[in-house]
Length: 396
Image (cartoon, helix red, strand yellow):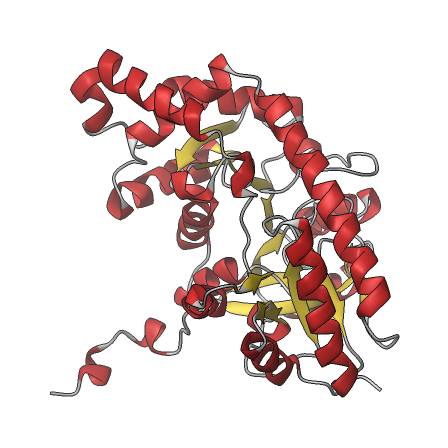
């Protein structure tokens, strides 16, 4: 029996998330990991959650463990709509539902909107979870390089002129993996292009609240008067990723189809998780909790950059984010960061090689991603010094 022949064509070429695979290497004692993408565990309000879970169990009883409505737990949906409103997200034609993390929201939206063979434009590099979701539906990926102020909109239009594009995917604020924030001019231009060429924008905003420098930039969705933008948010970076609670906001005719696809996918997001998020936000100062994270990440980011300035060779360049949890390092052209990654792993330090985040994952990359949110200060200093020593062997 040939199992390979039994597999659906749309999944045979998919590769496992390299980031998830890296986690399998991190069981080594003492490993310093800059490869993750989670908020700092020291910010998790464990004692509060413990009390809230007890409270929910006592007050809600079995109601917390039964099936819920697909659209989401109504009290949490109301809170999310309030969070959206603070960012001027949501018009009369929009609808918001709760999803099992932002990843599910993205997957369901691509499934609902993009036909096989249609094109999706994305930033290159971009979030591997979205790239794989697009690949899994046999859509065509068109990567567009990043500048310091976001995606190259001239290249976006060139692709729109030639290809059958259904969707533009962007992480405009503190982008994963680069940490870059898209300018207001480019946000307006993307919306203009979506109108001109009759396509949609998927605005992914899991990091927008985590600003520790600079001034906020309006979301693309806040400028959307016709339903061209579908907006995805998440509590994974402001509360905890393991809760798997996110949301999607878009034109009701699109969200109606997303709901049907979610019913097929997982019926509903676990009620107990939704209740925990709702009660925490309602009973405690959620904004203060986020601000604590911003202050911590601002400190960690500054420390990491200071160490990189000190220990990295002159040929290495890197972004200087104003928020979020990632920064992006670029080495001179022709240097492949995969062997550098493998050597650093041997020395007890992990990061994410750039090829993982690219549209063409087979091509060598001279870039890599660093996360600064999880490691304590001494580990940041030690880990960056170690990477710097390895880089000096490759960067002359």
